[in-house]
Image 1 (cartoon, rainbow, N blue to C red):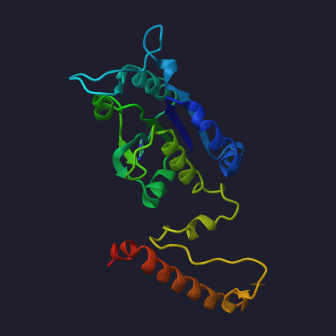
Image 2 (tube, helix red, strand yellow; image 1 turned 30 degrees about the vertical axis):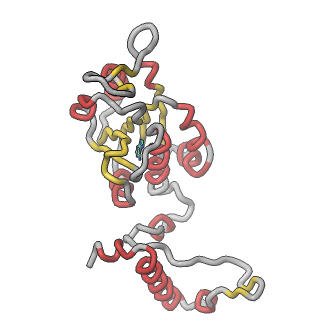
Image 3 (cartoon, rainbow, N blue to C red; image 1 turned 90 degrees about the horizontal axis):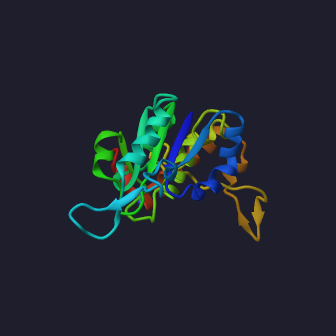
Length: 227
Ligand code: ADE
């Protein structure tokens, strides 16, 4: 899978993909993330990418020409399944969308900045608009990093243990059960004995019960969603 990110501040994306499991995935050829500096496609000798809002009002608007130029350059190389715009007024991101996106071949992510993009970009180029929550960031780069991370770890072979992504919180609209490691007793605080019993069936049942209890307690909305 390949993800191309169009950024106003590409430096913000240097860190997240040059460490961690995503770097390993990249080295193994499983997942390619390429960041593009929108300013390289800017207009005129100052490489302008934003301009004043028609009708007046504070804040600059990202112009359509540089964005189209960048998208066209990418599209000339390969076809894209989605062109996503990161914006606080998009659909709220969740594990379901992460799962869906992880099945795509090529994706472009456009990071918003300033007041946002000229509406014609949204109308004519964008296939999906995503928000990472009801708060406003100074730009879409960190939001893009977050969704790229969540997609990358779902790709087959990216996580060491193939099954571990399936057991994540939210994968079945359930939070994950409590987990423990050695020592089995620390300062008198004991690990639930069932986990040391070696009885796989009992352990599975315990995990399912605990996941349900935790979800009911912390996120009853997830359980209500399914009646
Ligand atoms: N850009 C600014 N705020 C954002 C948010 N909450 N989600 C996605 N992109 C954004």
